[in-house]
Amino acid sequence: MGEETGPVTLLTEIETEQSRLRGLLSGRDEAFMAERPPNGTWSVLENVRHLLFAEQSHLGRFRAGGREWSPLGLPPTGMQGQRQLQVMAGTPTASVAEVMDAWVVAHASIRAGIEGDAGGAAKVLDRHLRHLRAHIKVIERLLRNAGSG
Image (tube, rainbow, N blue to C red):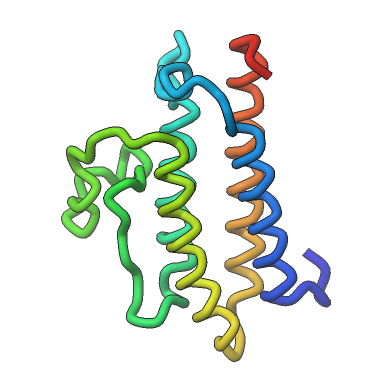
């Protein structure tokens, strides 16, 4: 991250990546996206659910009223038993589109808080953007390996 990269620029980059991901997944078979690969790692859907959770976890402190957890989010395995995250326990699997829609809503409320923040957001946003891009690479690999991409 260059020192001149501010929160609004980073938010725009995050939104660009979200849009790119939506385009990658648009029209894909939901059953395929919900199925874990043979090695047992997360499915495409689980990765998208995790990205919703990650945004709320990494950036939720900037949201007016504090963090709010979507029941469609998916925390990392080691965090799934935490009391504060029980809203996500036993959540029925949603479609990728439903998760993406929930993510857009969460992002909008966080964006409003960051735009009003006097400082401290750029470093957190940069870290979150790198995390988002890493998961998109994983999703792209899952799509390629399945012969769907």
